[in-house]
Amino acid sequence: MVRRADQATTTAAELVEAAEHVARSGKRRVVRALGKPLAIVPLATLADEPKRRAKPFTMKDPLWEIRGIVDGPGPTDVAANKDRYLAEAYAV
Image 1 (tube, one colour):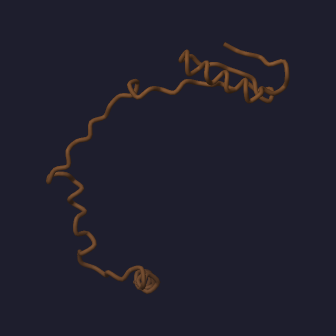
Image 2: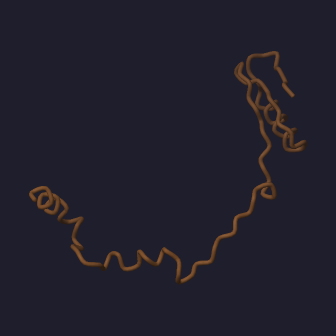
Image 3: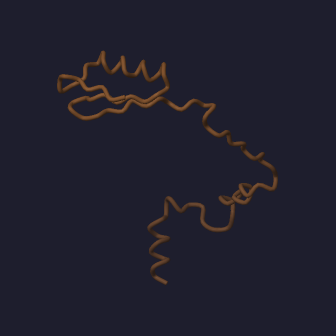
């Protein structure tokens, strides 16, 4: 349903009225604001959205593979010495 206002802009009261109509009816409505069409669309309800089930976190989860990555071999002061490490890498 297109509602055209006689004036170039739609008042705040008319926008509220249109939004309330959409909330009651569940159908979209188009009004004109500043001379351009403005669609007011109803929100989807949670029942309309498909439900996703999360898989359980087990000991076989791939996330366990990153465990201990910080304690592995190699330098642990990279943030403090990044310039030195980069210079060494490019010098080779």
